[in-house]
Image (cartoon, rainbow, N blue to C red; front, side, top):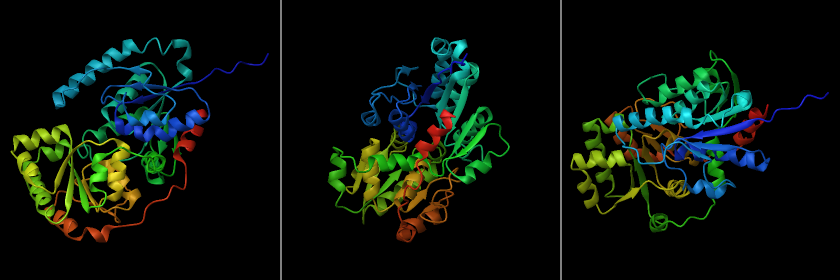
Length: 369
């Protein structure tokens, strides 16, 4: 008698908008091949109204573990994490029956606390775990924190490591599990999918004919450094006298600036445009037109590399190699380096990166095996 093949079940565990964006090529490939999948939303960000769902057949997450507002403090995030993790172990039992667990694959992405949550849930239920964007390392547990720790924990339990380049694969040489080189980050494929999309953006059409730079600072290690914050705000205000600045505001950044009475100074500078966090497609179009970007975001480093934009990373270390030694300058919080970049940013302009491989296709091929 011919043995019946048991169907596999694929669950994408997604916590943030950035994770959903980077998973887009994989989800699109699943839909192209008509493979059923489910999305579990941790609730770290409310992704239910994300514009990314307009690009998918699936219009909303299948399972939402937390539906509410998170207090964006260290204690608030910790309380949310523990409560959501514990409740999910009860909530997800009906989706992961014991008889099917060997045929269930959980797919997590990157380095957020939700990545670790998905990892722990997969191990609790005895499920297989795949990690997209695996193998990135700064080799410093406190920079970036807690992302480096999140990656190390996740790689300890991963069955399928889906790495964006050869360097990332080598970083996992002592780890168990299958290592797959996707050759490029899924983010580049996402970028190609959305860059020509139409967007209804007052900000974009307001500044698209102006020279401007982008400024983003939201990481706790920077916001806790009072001297650095004050020096950077002064630098932004000074440089905005010769070129407009789009200052993307995150909630923790606003709180620190108001506490230090710097928010009013920014609002009083006529060439500084204070913007809330932008939807992904809108942000890509704004980034595409900017002169340069100053940021402490790892994904922004990759995006600037793909666009060939001069990029100053406000970090001591970075877990990514994209653009280093080319268009990307690592500040190491050295103000001489920061000043030099602002004054000589044009020399860091480089060519745009072309999509040679399709990471989404490679990842789905690996998952199906």
